[in-house]
Image (tube, rainbow, N blue to C red; front, top):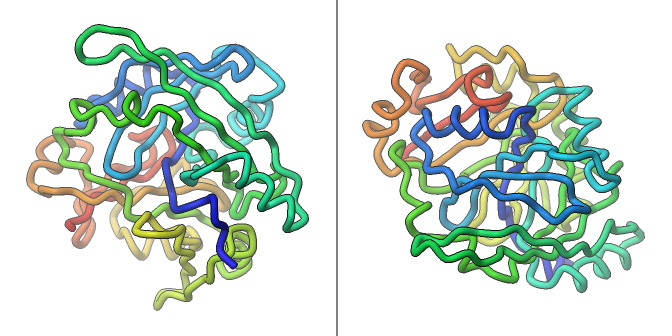
Length: 285
């Protein structure tokens, strides 16, 4: 039975070494970047968001070492920058945590935290969240998963932040590299009660729920076959590899990306070396 309190992908977290430098990198790629946020002290992290509809990307950096961010620091030390975890939307994080506990898993959390937000009119409010994580060891393809309940959606999905010069609209797929796509997809399927689907090239996808983005597990060779001509330097054999983004206007995408754009079949791509360890593939609706 599908989880009642967890629906599809909410956002993808790109872990970065230098938060402000990463934000400037993505700004140069034509994304509208939120003002910098600083999370509650026990989190020890800060972020910039790139808002779409109904999902978003998060650039996340460690500001001070804490117990809570130890796995993120370990990821940076071992892998470097890239997609470190992916969040689902939680309807109710406390109830969602109990749902996975009933399935024999010990959730981390729920954890409440917030960050100040400067609104377009200059006033300061707060973005408030309640999250829970699946156990750290339960990370299919090396990507941790968690669920995020937005208690103040109006301070996160701010309309002025949702228009991007590169015409990005939403996430279509999160691509995760692994030597064993079927095994990793089955692992995720068990964790979220979703059925994996084999794809023609040997990759295996897992729907995240509703109309949200799919997870796709594939080898680096399969990734290279999907996006020929795109340098994959910097990607690990196992770990978050790419985000496929829907563009509302590929001509605008190509113009905004400028010299870093790589045309690959029907997609316009940014190599991982130019986007903090994450291949970005823009595709038409």
